Image (cartoon, rainbow, N blue to C red; front, side):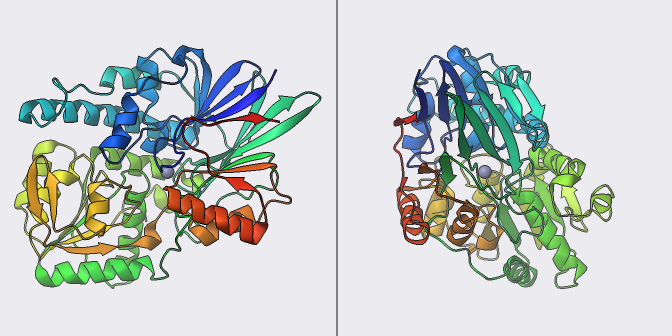
Length: 463
Ligand code: ZN
């Protein structure tokens, strides 16, 4: 019986990571991500799933970012009832990430119906809070570095250093008398992060599926703390607000860590830092609970005052009313809120309020997918449309590459250099076409491997 690998998402795009392994008639889905970005990407979430979801035996997750897990409740809504395996820290993060995602889906649909800006009447959520609850019942935590055997495959999760709980998946596929090793890089972290450990080096694979988010770029050498200090100087002088759109999981904790370091060094004043994302509040607790996963001192993590993932004056904002009160608040102050690509969530209300004022700074700290408001801002848009309103861009815009949770081109090549011999087949995914192409060229030149960048829907035999 022939085995197959099918690329169902993150093939020619950064989001929507979904790969299907069909092994001896059993189907396993690796990651179950939401497509994010512009209208055409988001529309893909509404397409029928290519195989009946109830036929999928199990889902295996690399990490808890929405572009890797955010389609799960939709899969469950369509009949999937199998187990979902993820690392223990990812399992803890999923408890907050999935209900939050459902909430955003419901909120967006309700808002669209109220304001009548949707093209669909009525606008429906992709899934609901109930679907997310059903999904959470299916999740099973697995430890790092311990093999899990399922029908026809054995999987091991290795630390990827990207966010808490993030993993590289090594899948051993029984093949005749021998076996084939399929390695999914997931998202790879950076080698010099102060918060996360570097990605585990992998030496063997028959098939390799490698991400390429930053396959065409090197992160700037400018230390993140210098960028943050500049932004903070600006708002201290202008009495403005530093607005940082950040993914609640990962980016927010790293930003807090670096502001705290600046405070400890006496480089910046102890300005109030508002974490305006209920999810970021919970996530910070989980980051502290799973101390072994990162580089920080575990004893400090448990100490509220000394915790390096908090600033001196951190204020967690949970409810919407409190969040609205922030609009009236004069600077200088820092507001960190989600979503990181400005495609939903509370950050939109802050932007609506602060973007037209030159005293304020908007600091972009993560990847901005094509079609998102974050990308438009980086491309120099003079106006941004938020909830049907045109907001002029007058705030000072800054970017901190060094805060990326993704390996850059050289770091990807460094990780690939750890293989003792070329994989039989290497597939480049999770990148816009030009990043994937650039990484492919880098691999051909430096490593002389044969690589390809599959398109969505392509199927390859595992031989
Ligand atoms: Zn990620």
